[in-house]
Image (cartoon, rainbow, N blue to C red; front, side, top):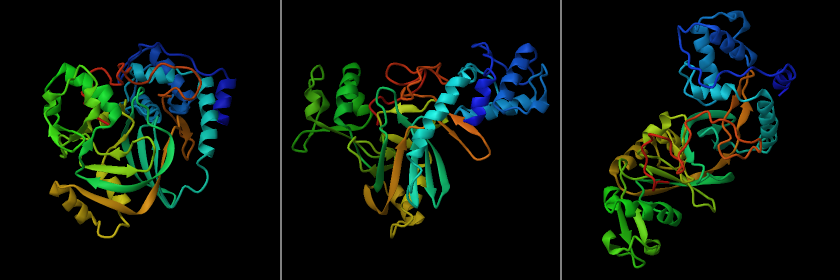
Length: 361
C-alpha cells in the first residue's frame, strides 16, 4: 500500500493504446512506453533502459506482469494485458486498501489444515502447518450463478458419484435445453425419476411447461460423462454447493474460469483428495486408486473434517513485495466497473467459443 501510495502521488502511470499488440522483436516508441509502464510497477528493472526493442528483458517483464494479474504468462502484449495495465493506479491503491480489511478477517487461527478458495482468482490452495501443500486452478460460479463467500468444512468424499441435478438447474437449464434439443438428456446420460423412484421416459414430460420440476434427474456416473467427474467433495453449507472433479479439463487452461453454477471444479483433484483423506483410516493412495478404478459408488467420511474458506480477495501481496490483482468479477469491491482483462462473457456466463455443458454445476 505504501508503494502504491507513492505511485499515485507521483501521478500514476500513462495509459497504453487499448489495441496495442507487441511481441519479441517489435520496435518503436510503443515499446518505450511499455518499458516505462513496466518499470513503474517494478516488473522491469530500470537498468533495462528505455530502448525501442521488445527484447527478452521485456518478455520476462510482461510475463511477470501477466502472472501477477492471473493471465496466461505468454510474454506477448495483447489487449487483455493492456486492459490490466490501463487500470488507474488510484484504483489499484483502493483495491489494496479494501482487501486489507478483508484479509484481516482471516488473520486468526484458520486451523492446522485448511483449504482456501479465492473466487476472483479462481484458485484452490491446501495449507498445512502454515505452508501451502498444493495449488489448484479452479472453475467457479459465473456472474449469473455466483459462488458464495463462506466458512465451512469438508466432511466427505464421493467416488464415482451420480449427479442429481439441482432444482434451480432443472428450471434454468434443463427445460430450455430440452426445448431446443429433445435428445439432450439421452446424450448426457441423464435419467428421469418420479416421486416413487421409478424411471420415466423423457418424452412423457411436457417440456413446454414446468412439469419437469416435479421429477428428479440423475446423471450416470463416469469420468467422461458425469458433470462431477470422478469425485465430489461435500462441504457443509446452506447453498447446495460443493467441490468436484470435471470431465471438462480444458477450462483449467483458460484465464476466464467463471463457468459453473456456483460449485467449485478443482484441477488435479486427485492430489486434493489424497490430502483430504490422508488421516482417514484405510484410505491409502492405493485404496483411492482402487476406488477410482472400480467405477462403483463409494462414500468416505473424512476422519478429521478440514476447514474450508471460500473468500473474495481481489488484491494481495506476497513475500518479496510481489503484488497480485484479480478482476472484481462479481463487482463487490464497490469501485465501479473496469475493462475486463479476460474475454468478455456471454449472457449465460460462458465465453465466446467456449464449449460447455450448460446444465452442469
